[in-house]
Length: 362
Ligand SMILES: Nc1nc2c(ncn2[C@@H]2O[C@H](COP(=O)(O)OP(=O)(O)OP(=O)(O)O)[C@@H](O)[C@H]2O)c(=O)[nH]1
Ligand SMILES: [Zn+2]
Image (cartoon, rainbow, N blue to C red):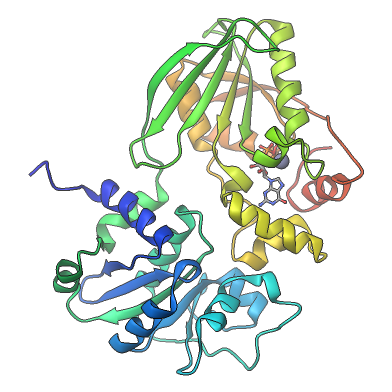
């Protein structure tokens, strides 16, 4: 029946539900659970979750490290929510904002034994909804019945898992001429993924020869740097320098990938900035929030280049991971073109951390 939403559509709906604070049913082989993102949980919903059973808060191994909670499941921990814990307690487990001024009291007790598969799915969904990776989970006996009774989105674990690790096919929606400062011969292409996630853009300068390596840049969205002129990073100057070089050469392709904050979203990036003001560097801040250093998937850049007809690039970057990923996904990197612009007194430490911890080339 084509009118029923498929798994991609249900996942998109679940992401929206989690962002709104609406519970989602996660369905395993012979177990089911109700999941609500810690960040959007309300006191009324917490009370109703408690009426169903003993909820836990699922957090990543990274966040568990910071909180000194045991991560028996390796990549994640299922932390028991004490009977007298309120919403503030849950927020403090999820969000490191007040880790230093109001450290969590008492040891956190993690669940061991049983399956953590639904909790892992819950965290993956929260990350893909660009929320803090912390989800309150409580078992329910009849997942299908519960979902039907309350009109909740129900995600079948075994159908969802292959989609979370994979990237969705991207389709070009439209392209149009866009003269820009760097070149009057600009053209903007819009790509929309089939899973309802963020759209990505490609700016083509001139008409690059598809048979030759094209001057290319994979730029990750940075609202603060690209638009506001932030001095904390080098994104704005890199964006403009890349376009300027393409304009001078008369040809090039800049992919503007909507992977704000290295894939954690703008709200989480601002949480990371707030931690940086407490003295943590860019990598430590991501870890305290429960994220990896870099949550981006550069393969989608290769997908767009291929869709545009390119198979080889001269890549404007200082990031060896971008080069490795291009090569791995079948786009040849004929040359690395360094992009060193925009160092300021405010971002010197950030750039040094990227060089030291993330392997960026100087
Ligand atoms: N999480 C997080 N993201 C940041 C921070 N500073 C900048 N960003 C994001 O980092 C990304 C910058 O990516 P790119 O310009 O592709 O930079 P790169 O990976 O260093 O690689 P090259 O510039 O190609 O050498 C953007 O998505 C920014 O929003 C930060 O402190 N924390
Ligand atoms: Zn930036």
